[in-house]
Image (cartoon, rainbow, N blue to C red; front, side, top):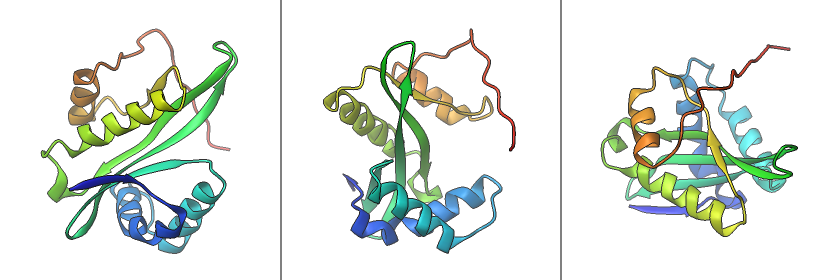
Length: 146
């Protein structure tokens, strides 16, 4: 198993699993739009994607975005997506992807890394706590469809 940063030239490698990830979370499958989304984000340097691969191909990925913070007057790193195929779960691959994200963030000069997940994500929440991430119980996060 190998973990590496996805190059824009290799976007096609991740499109099937990215589409699978979106379908897993009740979105419509759209391979063409997935390709465009990933290609544009990588070519514009709007995202960093780590991929976990075995002999069969991509078995997991983690996607990072940066965001500005007025309070901290710095950039923060956001783990927006972490997904593993069914066959990859339970093998500590998510943990390895997270460690790569932490190393990338530290090496790139970020002070803080954030993520948001559903309370029902038992495995993810257990992993994030195990890795020393702190739950923010003091803030509410709101959203509105536009």
